[in-house]
Image: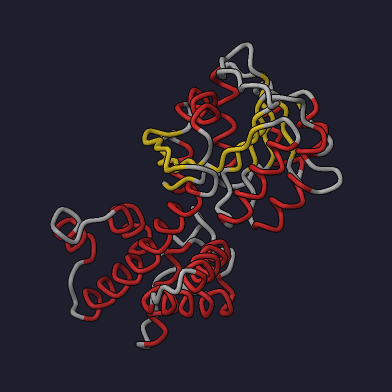
Length: 308
C-alpha cells in the first residue's frame, strides 16, 4: 500500500528540482528562499550557480536528486526528456523513497502524466502533473497559473510548494487533467498571438503610433495577457524568449495529436502550428513566441525592428 503523502513544510520537507531553464531557475529559487532544503540538477551546471550560492545543493544526476527528496519537481523541455528523467534507468522513479511525491511542471503529454502516476503508485510513490502559464515574468514574480492533475491527497500535500510559485492554483482532476488544461491554454495563446501580431502590423502600415494604439486596445474588449505583456515587446523589437518558439511548436503538436485522438477538428490550431513551424525554420526556434511578428511582417515586406 502506498504511504500517504506528507504535507510540504519549509524547513522539514526536502525538495529536489530538475531543470533550470528560463522558467525552472526562478521557480526553484522561490522554494529555496521559502526555506525548503533543495537539491538541484540540470544539464548545464552553470545555470545552477545562483541557486547554489543561495543555499541549494548540487546533485550529479536525477537519481541523486530523488534519493534524498520528499518532493521532486521536474521542469523540462520535451516529453522525451520527462520520460528519460523520470522513468529512465537512472531516473527519479527508480531512486525515490516510498511515499515521495513527483511533480512534473513540464508541458507534456497527458498520456505520459497518466503513465507516470500509474508507475509511481506501483512503486509506492505519488505523482502530480502541474504545468504552468504566465511566462518568464510570472515565474520570476511567483504569479503563475498552475493547472494541476492528480489524486486529491497528493495535490493537497504539495499545495504549500505550489503556492510559493503561483497565484492561481487549480486542481483540474485526476492524473493528466493538468496537462489537458495546459493544452487548452496553449490553443488559446497560439491563436490570440496571431491576432496581436496582425493587429500591430495593421497599425504600423496605417501609420499609427504603436504605443498609443496599445494603450487603447489593451484596455478594451481586445485586451489579453498576450497583448499587454508581449505587445510592448513586439513594438520594441524585443524577441528575447520568455517562452521559446520551439517549445510552443512542441505544445501545438501535442494538442493537435490529442485533438485527433478525440476526433476534434481545430483548424485555427492547425494554422497556428504551421505559422510557428515556419518561424522556427526561419531561424527563430530559440526566440520568444512574440517573434511570430517577424514571419508575418516578412509576408507584407515590412522590415520590423529587431529583425535579423
